[in-house]
Length: 222
Image 1: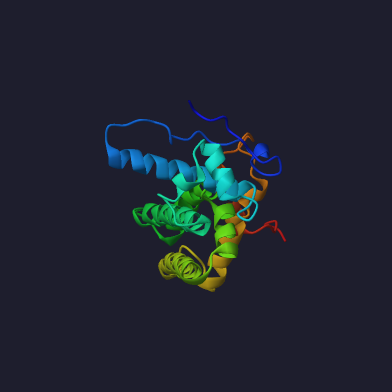
Image 2: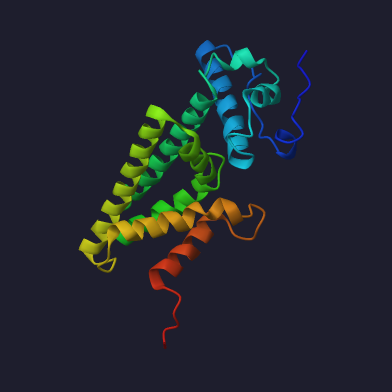
């Protein structure tokens, strides 16, 4: 019989947990293992993003999945390993944003628009910027070094798209590094104020943010 879910009052009780598939049965052992691993990571990412990494324990994750704590060690060496695996999923999703941008048949500005329309959806998910913020603060050693390099690579990739736009004339001559920083900063704040029940979806909000950055806020007659 499945155990009754238990949550610490100060931590997971306040969180609307996503549906998981830890207990879903399949005939393929490898598929079953991957379902369990992803169930663990989905739940952990949700809690890390909404409650915080330090406020979430392995006991919390195990209890929410209705399994024993030792069962988690089959899929992760430690809580930090779980955080790093979550961060890798986030980075993979950012890579898909860049792939979407590179597939566009257009100029540099067109690619920027496509990238951030896709990125806006990713950034407000459980594997979005709130999760990455926790990863930057709490990963240590080689994990931290690996994450930092991946973030630098992402920054450089966006700068290269901006440089393409400057070259083709779709983006005015500017410091590509500074523009990349402004764009990432604007979008990475979305989880703080985004309302999924609001009137606008992430793509529409992305368009609004880009319009403000591209055309500024000054009236045309000023």
